[in-house]
Length: 459
Image (cartoon, rainbow, N blue to C red):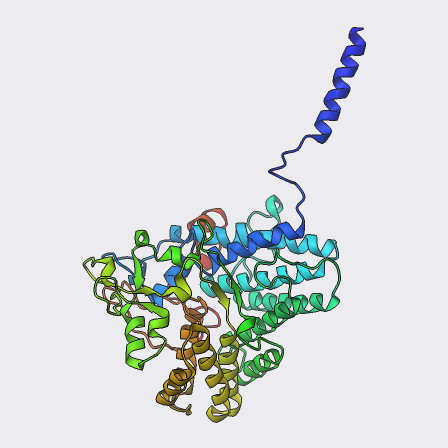
């Protein structure tokens, strides 16, 4: 009887072990469950700064945002490697690693629409990261304990990988095979035609980034961009964004970034430029100071602290709790087309695309057609002397709070900036590699200073 009881006990135990698993920690997750969290991560922590620093630091370098704190701070170019630990973790551990897993799974399952989306998001995240840090681990990354110290790819190689990923995503969409996303796709609700337009628009973006890079020519890059844009975004409905309900826990990340506890307000450089231009978007994009009712930005680098309510913050269109977070805009495609056409065919040929970009952004934020037309007339026609300045200035307005503006400033010099009061250096042209990476995976590139130029930032 005892032997029978032992056999029964062990048999029961074996059966129990075979089926024991934690439903809250699944070992196999469907693509439809993997996609939305990573899309939200990109919105919260890549294109904003939900629990890290990089996006708001770049807006301070661009003199769009200011801390209501005494100098020194990020706005006066103070940075330590540890300041970038959270951002590196967001990019690599939370975003790129999960996208790598999604791509592998979707490809293995023949779900090529999911694979395409994953590759586009990977390209987008890689572009964000390389334009901040330069050289990055990629081809040797994501191998776990088999290679804990991956050697960095050069930025030139990373740009090649970005274009490869986008080309593969376009081909994957063309397969029209496997499961298609629906409501689990927080960006486009499974509309693969819009994902395809985004892929081509990103190709154009990254071609134009290299217009002055070593070994390239502006005309060649411009032509590549125009070819891509022939299949790119066509109107504001193509915007790559995530909508937020505004409910508790579902607020727009930029609303969170401007809560009083952060002490962030808008910088005077940004606010004053609206007044100088007599820009009708002033009241659509900027909220007047509570204390005075005036549109007032804070000067970066001040030695004293002002009242938060004496400064302006973004208006509801971009920073309400229920506002959308815009990652890539159709207007960017229009201004890319204007810049590329300017390079190849001159200012007159670029004018229609420039006008389109301005008008569509005015329309999006709620400016009347009459006010938009009058504003354009006051700005004047594009000429060889003013075209690149006007194109990039208007592009930066339509890309409000977007890290893309930092890349445009570095490669064109517009919008024109001078270093801030109490600056600790010249205006930074990159950020430091994180302390976590320096200690765990030492690489020679990590000696770079914030004033050093990236590979493509040669001119």
